[in-house]
Every structure is written in structure tokens, then in C-alpha cells.
Figure (cartoon, rainbow, N blue to C red):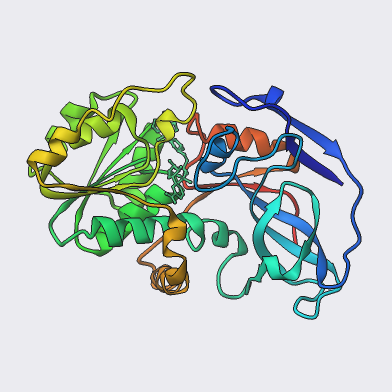
Length: 332
Ligand code: NDP
């Protein structure tokens, strides 16, 4: 068996010096536990925050302990009355090839309902983040203009599609022409902007002639300053993520655009998806319904092999992924 541990806290971009892969024994399950084979590991930007020794909404990862996060796995032996061999489950689990876990920490998936990997993406945490952040805080109305940054990622792709379902005009900002092509041609975004090759402020002025009513912010920094310069009276801004700032070695200045909120009586609200935990089931059901009806679609970027997990994780910060980034560790 193998596990990946945090061996040093990164300052700036994480690299191989901050992690270690260790051999460990497989632990036999005790009463109420199961032994799992890891199938898919989710790598997520928020994990970067947990690598710092700083207070946040989840405690930091401990040094020399395995990293952990969303994992889909299969039961290979069971001493649980709830789960049997062959069952597919999801949980917040350590980055290990084989995992021994209490059954109470796992949720059983129905592989007939949707592909099992979707439970880490559109039907899981990122999909629910888009659903509640956009619909509760952004609350887009037909004909309004919604701008989403990080538009081609796991959360952003769902945000744009939901905004279109609600009848809004959608403008997506992302970092490559391949991504723009996907957003425009497959997800039917109305307008797309490449923040690496265009002047974002100018392109936003051109693509948002009626201003911005809703901004779903996945990235923070200069891109968000540019969007905020164009908000309309009564605009709603859902503060979801700040990925452009996660690897800064020194704290950035800002925010610089609060004046825009003031003069436009606008709302900016941060949120953590778990704020909506009581409504997850309803959100996931509605997402699954739209997926089934073909109103929503999704893409995954999958790297193969447990030893590729760190590459997949750091790739989030260089924009290697379109849609949800996953690591496929084994077949069921
Ligand atoms: P993504 O799938 O969107 O992957 C990250 C993407 O961010 C990359 O593909 C890259 O795309 C973009 N990116 C990386 N660095 C920069 C940068 N410096 N400037 C602009 N864009 C950058 O990840 P998720 O969909 O999982 O997460 C999106 C955001 O939502 C993150 O900020 C995350 O922390 C946040 N989040 C918040 C949650 C909450 O509860 N509030 C829950 C889940 C996620 P590109 O090629 O376009 O640069």
C-alpha cells in the first residue's frame, strides 16, 4: 500500500519537495469498518489553503500525515452491516491506494444513476458549489448578464450552464483558446474572454454592453477588479474562490474595488458550499434531473495512476484541466 503525505508547508507554488510517497501496510478492517480500493481521487484548489498553517474553515493538513479529500472507492472486504464487497462509496478519505475506514464516514453510490466519477464533480461538491452560490447569492434573472471567472473549471462550467437555464446571458473568462472554444461551442456561453491574451477590461466592455448584473468569482485579483468596474446597480457578487491568490508568496494588496459596491448598492457575499449542507440532497437531485434531461453536460480531465496525483493537483494552478480534474487510480 502507498500514501502521499505533506512533508513541508509550501510558500508559493507547491512542488515535489513538499510531499512524500510512503509505503504502508494494509490495515485489516475491524467491526464497523471496510477495506477500500481507491478508484478516483479528486484534486481541488481548496487543498492548497489546507497546506498552510493558518486558521480557515477547515483545519490545516498535518505535516507527515496523508493528504485527504473526496475519493470514490470500492469495498473489497467488509466488517460492516451496511456495506458489502463490491459496493462503490464516496467519502472524505486519505490519499492512499487502499483505505480502511468506518462505514459511517462513507456514502454508498448507485452506479446505475450516473457515472461514479460525477459524484466528485457535477453531482458532488463542485456542482453544488455552483448551484447554491449562483442560485442563492447570484440569483440571475432572465436577460441579465452573468460573468463567471475560472469559467472552464469544475465549478465554472456548471455556473455558466445554470445561468443559461435561468435565461441569463453568460460571459465566461478562462485561460486558453481550447477552453473558450469548449465554453462557446459545447456549453453555449454567449461570450468568452481569454484573460491571458486579451485586455480583460476592454473585452468585458465589449461583451457586456449592458453592464454586469451577477459576478460569480472563482479567481479574485486583477480579473475580479476588471469585472467589478462594470457592475450595475443592485449587482450580486458570489465570492466563491480566489485561486489567483493562493500561491502568492507575499500577501496581495486589495480588495480595491469596494467603491464600486458602494455606488451601485451591490451585494458581495462569500460562501462555503457546506453552508448549504442541509439542502445538498435537493440540489443534487435537481442537478441530476437537468443532467438526465440534457440541459447540463460536463467534462472531466482524468490523469491515470496514483503517482500522478500531485501532478494533477499542481496542474490546477497552471490551468491543465477543462472541467473537473480527477485521478483515476484503479478500475472497479
Ligand atoms: P477548477 O476546475 O476551476 O480548476 C482551477 C482553474 O483555475 C484552472 O483550470 C485554471 O484555469 C484557473 N486558474 C488557475 N490559476 C489561475 C489564476 N492565477 N488566475 C485565473 N485563473 C486561474 O477548480 P474548481 O472548479 O474546483 O474551483 C474553482 C474555484 O472555486 C477555486 O477558487 C476554488 O477554491 C473555489 N471553490 C470554492 C468552494 C466554496 O465552497 N466556496 C468550493 C469549491 C471550489 P485557466 O486556464 O482558466 O486559468
